Image (cartoon, rainbow, N blue to C red):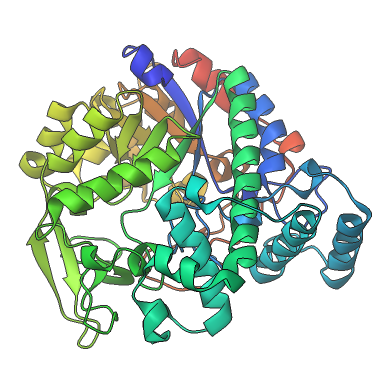
Length: 489
């Protein structure tokens, strides 16, 4: 059970690192961070007073660099594999040497495709040293569906709605019965997943020994071309041929990012609420094997209203969502899990804030939305919330602060009591707030002002940044003092 559930009066500091890929250590030689890079970070984070380390989704996304474009939430991304924490056979050492010969490590970002394929090659070498036999009867259905989907997608090299009819139906059991020639390839994917799950669990156990918990992110929607949609077609808005009838997005007149079309498949929330809830329960059960603190992405579309877009015309419309029904089911099913609702945006007090309060689920507050009182008045943040200086979709705090007008800065300075007027004191203001959880990103701490992602926009550098400094070189002194003085240590 999370410390957040054990002690409801605790005040906690959270470190948002976005992804293991962002991390760099002095011994890093793989051109990208991985699960192994978490160990030195955990030790440094504990020394600074952090109790939580937060990630974007860790699901497999194939060669898509966005962590929100998953093949399945019931998976772990092979790109996070720590090669150094595997048995070091001669073949694995050779694969590593050849990879490093072909790839000169960048100082500012990773080569996602090369790194992903390298990790798959290493896993294949490790798998070849086993007997290759896995009993499919012991595998949870959604995990098995993911493994078979990966194999079939590699075989056909098309989106699943273009596969031959026998495979397009998503009948996992029947396909495996009819095609034993696929069993070894499916076993490899399952072996890889077991290896990754073990590494994640070991890292989480190490974190627990240092009084730190991981925060995992549950994306609201899967990709249309994913194992989740393929093996659960009746849950989504699809045409008879399997192509998307509607896709995801958002649209609010006051949204600073403007109208967005994300393109994910959308659950049939209102037509099949019980089955959608069951599916969410199954996905949370998978995530909670490693983490007991889970952030639910885009809560507005779960509890208030969701936006669906006709991909042919680009026109969208809002629909009423499920209200509190999903959250009641999740809290009942997972009494030992602490949920955080990603509700940052232009939302409704009656439709979102009040229901979340009644359910005891914290929403989020960020001072960067300064033109709305509920976000600007940091000292008045509710106790039941996560207050953050920034996140993966926002500018780093230093970048945002440097572009702020003097009058806007004065609005924050006016809330500070007993301290000077500086950007550091505004960060202190967030950590001094009543919020139960106060979060800062690693980018904020090291002053990395490059945009990590920007909603609704596409850039080849998004999601691929790597820290300009190693974990061992990061100066946690200032944030450690803030954490201690705010009573969050």
